[in-house]
Image (cartoon, rainbow over all chains, first blue to last red; front, top):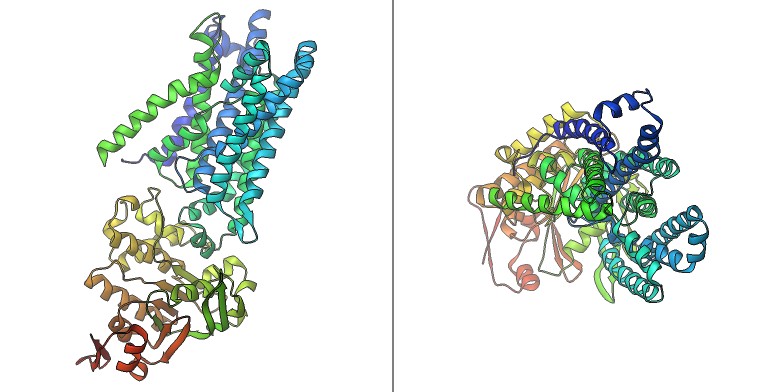
Length: 339
Length: 257
């Protein structure tokens, strides 16, 4: 497959993302004209109701989509590099399955809180998800680390084992929950951005920016790691330190994403893959390119989630897979033809 | 200045892989290791390059313990070409060679120059924009050779440079085998110490200043090829009857089996 130059892809996405975000401002149960949206963004109030919809509901949601998409896709690119496997996924290190158990546990045990105060309940689920995700990752990492370093193969297997255990715990929790809880659990697992608030946006934004600042330092190391761990060491890379850093950063990024938006699948697996097909595996471009592409995909998917079944809404996670999977299949077919 | 293994022993899961090996790899010379499969050649390379820590004994690089060198300084002095590299991401050849410049801060322009020269040296300029994943075995190995050459392209401020090659010619046709030997000799003339494992005794005899014959985790013989290669040695180590003759032109020993 012929490559696109990395700079031109990043420029194209950097233009596409704000356009998609702006269009996304206008769509939903209430239609707002592009002119109104533009003037509101420029600081001129349109009317009370429109302002409320734009700034209290849609803008935080779009920003959350941007940050979550960027974090999921960039951590996906990083994990694929670290595991030297283009089909790796942030969930491989156990973060998603752990988060899932944490969230379910909170929904089931703290059901009373959720009914008494939605805000408290929501944050409890988020905290549960984050703690669960981080703890699972830590466990996977510890299982795979011995005196001579961390074995990525063992991590992969440990991730599968912890994932299976988490799946069992989740089923157990589902079994003991009532209908209402069951629905909450399954909705949470589908991934949803509808609960966006400015608090969530600021937390997610801070994490996203933190990762975007730190990942570029490791991009050369990731490139070297694609040759193999001992080859990377011979190129002067402190492999163990790089691994530890990237795993902690990924657990943090994915943990917070999952806590705030549930399990939004597909973005972390497929977006880096698509970007790699387009511009090649050089992480100096792949990681920021994936971040932009993931953000754009999630903004588009979330816009569609708001309009396909008006007046209701679909969970965003369903749309990401529905949108991305056929695109990915088309790319694979294209690649097969070229080879 | 040398790369020096001081009385190395390596035990792994109950097996004695290396027993009391002392080996000096001199800068500006080619050292070749030969020996039957499982004799411990690769284990020795792993210990010498710091991938595996010896059970007993120390490894020195330019008179300082290998593990005491900062990783980056070490990478500027010591480049290692493994037998196989499992790279399954679609880098182009020049990107792969560019990875060899990671330990250096010479800037993009200089790096690109070195990358082009290294590819040219291994007769792989035509691969520059081709994808690594779509190359033949010999092409991949040449690109990897260019990568380690790019890594030690310029002299290092920290000390003499060394290149370790594990069966560099195994995937090569005759002309590229010859090319590799020429490159290795040129490097030695430039002052680089080359250590390589080879299977072809004649190839080793042709280019090595110091030939090390390995057998069962110990050094069976070591010295100039013409001093140590004998029918008895080859029979003892490889269990093969042979005749040692002399190359009519190079006057180097010629092993006929």
